[in-house]
Amino acid sequence: MAASLSSQIQDVLPKTQDTYYKLILAVGPARTGKTAALTELAAKHKWPRVNVNLCLSEKLLELTHRQRAIRVAGILNDTVRDENSSVVLLDNIELLFAPELAQDPLKLLQSLSRNRTIVAAWPGNFDGSSLTYAEPGHPEARRYPTPQAVIVNAGEADPPGIGPSGKVTK
Image (cartoon, rainbow, N blue to C red; front, side):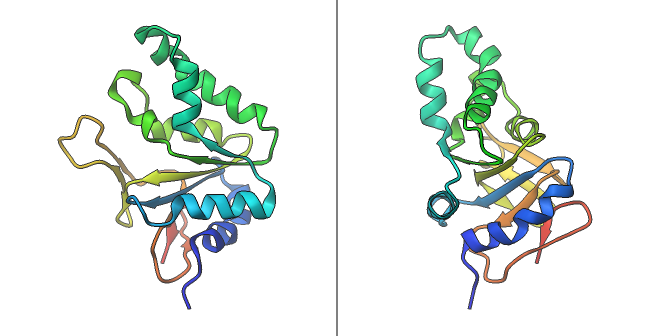
């Protein structure tokens, strides 16, 4: 029987405590159970679940185009810090990839995970060595070879293990 995505995330959680970045990415395309897994973890452990798109869009609305790019990281950092939890779940992170915000989404998530565990739903793919978002040529496309994060692939049949670089392996 395959372990649920929320169980896989929960299983790797203790192993992130000794890593520089306490970042777990639940990676998969749309409709692979990432939001359901984060919702389940939030309910079970009382961890806060932040809808990043909603949070940022509300707070960036009043700012100028230039101010948005400058302030997005601080707003997200304040939001996570205000949750006052050792584990924060981040869902719907697509806005972080918007070219007009000029952010490096992985680096931003890593910086958030220095002082607390961040579990983020990453809408993309992980092929065992590279983490991607969007298709090559798309204005929001990103590719990260050997990302410094624990990766849990949504929809995988077997629970993952952690490799020497901190990546989750099969």
